[in-house]
Length: 424
Image (cartoon, rainbow, N blue to C red; front, side):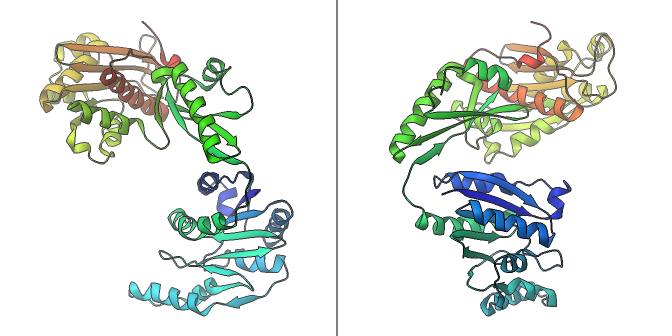
């Protein structure tokens, strides 16, 4: 089956919102061994929408449409879809009753324009929306299946899982099976990864893709086979080869984040963690505390931005701050030790640096960062010089901290990001 993703809305073309629905829909289709061949976005213009619908019908077996199902004047998907194929719009009374009931649950009266959401192209199958006012629809025209869904991500995902994917699974013909995985890496750029893996997935049975999601790089092996077992076997062989070649550069698979990996390792080792942050401003603690169950292994953190806070809250000697400055190896070590001692944690990590765009000097330029890790009897610091903007300086510094903790718990050597090395 050839699939197409069609997202509708002027806001997408103006760049006002990130079109995350495309990636979600494509990923979900791949779970049914259906590969997406086209991604299309179109504004709220009837002529452009008609052109997009007709093009899709001429080349695709299934089209997943997102957006344009709301009650306002610029929500035109159902009307234009009907007009594009010479169909009338008909009122679906059960949907109208469901929309009225939706508003009644919140003690509100339905606005007249919400009735628009209960009109569908003749012959369409209505797809219920239990968490919103916009029902979806399945329309089959010219041997093409059009699934229309809301643009609101949580409503779209619910309808996709409950209504769309089961219908597609029932209609999917036999053929080649596709399987894919996502391997997450940190510490090496995609060009270096490609060079290091040049002989992996080189025979055509498995396609290896590369994608940057700063500060990580993702590897996406996609395998095809005559059966699910064959595709999975090829995929497992390729993933094993990648892991053997890259070692701990691969930190997780799928949607697992680095902080979740760190939390799992800490819990299994019976260890606890505390953080002291300056240049990351709480970003590290926020990521750690976002992991469910973090209270089992995360003791707490201090954002000590000013020198006085570093001294008062973490015990950094004032003389050390005067002699070396806040952005220095000794201060980073003292901050990590202070966090570990004050929170009674097994491990303490600290960040201090110059995120920019101002505040740098010839001796200490913008992008200079020190990260420190303290544990019983051992405290070490690492110096980086990151060539990024302020936001990415903070992101990569937090990631470097988490990766150092991960490697420490695994008992493997630290690997410094190639684009951040300044000194041994």
